[in-house]
Each structure stands twice: as C-alpha cells, then as structure tokens.
Image (tube, rainbow, N blue to C red; front, side):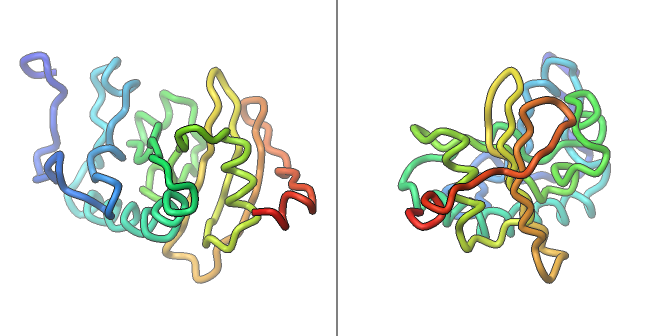
Length: 178
C-alpha cells in the first residue's frame, strides 16, 4: 500500500469511465475485494499483457455480456473478472483459470437466479466457452468466451462443491422456452 491506497502498475491503465462496451467499464473487471483486503495488485505484471487482457475482456463483453444484458433488460454485476495469478491462487481459482487471461467473469443478473442465468446461456446460441453454475459461500454464474478458439467448447457445468464439476442439467422443456 502507498498512502492507504493499493499500488497501481507502473504502466498506464484505463480511467474509471473508460468502457469495454455500452454497459461495462474496464476497471470493474479489475476490482477485487480480496486483493484489496490483502493489499495485492490485481493487474498484470506488464503493459503488453494488460492490453491483451483488455482486448479479451472487450470480446467477452461483446460476445456474451451485452447480449445477455439485452436479453434480460437488467443490470449485470461483475463479481470477479480479471484475476492476477496471485489473486487467483488466493481465492482458490483453477491453475488454468480463464480469469487470469481476461476471458471469464463471474456474474449476477439483477433479479434473476444464477441457476436460471446459467441454464439460459447453456441453451442459447451465445458463443460461450464455459458456463458454470457455482455454489460456494455465495452463488454466481461463471461465463467465458475464448477469442483464440475458432470453436467455443460450449461446456455447461455446475459446481456445488469446491473442485467438483458435473454437467449442468437442462430439461428439454427449459431449452425450448428460452
């Protein structure tokens, strides 16, 4: 910490008002309450990586988050976007987490259950790489889009216990009503 504030990277970052898309700001994807609690930086170590991560986040917003916001007509909160390798380790993230590349976000859609959001994404034509309904001390939807993959994996999973992933079950009735 420096003067009670977290140390910022040595390179230039976006301002608080800079946007990735119509409804999502760059800095909301770099905020981390856990990093703040532990006085950790949640930025990549170098400017070149920062720009790659911002480009990946822009793709995530355009391909998944903006269409999802349009579908529900409701605000989406980013509970976890980009994570530095250190922050990812502290929060118990996977060693191969797409969060560390800016390709994933944990989200909440105001007034819609994370299970319903996860099932909607899984049954939609959105180009998602992974959607995971996650239950820990809170509940959220993890969604990713990988612009480096010509074809997204479309993995639809649920994790009701840390480290345990199972297929997300969507009934035929639910698939047709979305």
